[in-house]
Amino acid sequence: MMRTKVINDSTDLVTIIRAFDDSVKKDVFLEISKEWTPVSSIMKKYGKKGEKALDLFDRMKLAETKWTTPEEGIDGKPQKMYRSFYSLFNINISCPVNEISDIFSVSSLETAEFEKIEDKIYEFVGDDGKFGNSVSEQFGLSNTALKALVKRSNKFLYTGLKLTRS
Image (cartoon, rainbow, N blue to C red; front, side, top):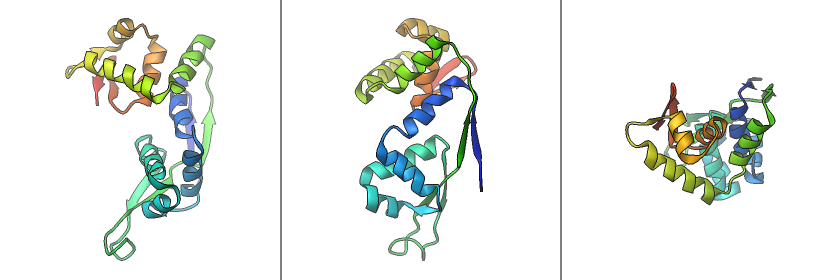
């Protein structure tokens, strides 16, 4: 089945960039785009990095999952199978240069540097959340950079104008 992921919000590019930023992720996605693939098959071929790629695709809603029956599983236990949710991407965005540069800057941050910023924002937001503008001002980020950061992170959600912990 051909499904198209339509991207018309510039910050959604972060998801796509992070999904295919190394060869293992790309290869795993190509495998699951052909047919339902059990996690054991990916683990055998790509190891822990392959399993992390599957988890990432699942969280980003780029893959769908189902469980096997015990007979089809390993040692009589069911296992998860993955298949790509989309076979096409349609990217149609227009945005100012400063916004796209913020998006690419956040997407390409080294993991350690990103996690450092993410942890600081997590502490600042607290259990009750904070308005996005307050977070942007506190950390010297543009609203676009903050939205891109939230798209890259698993720790935050936007609820209206408020940034909360997920």
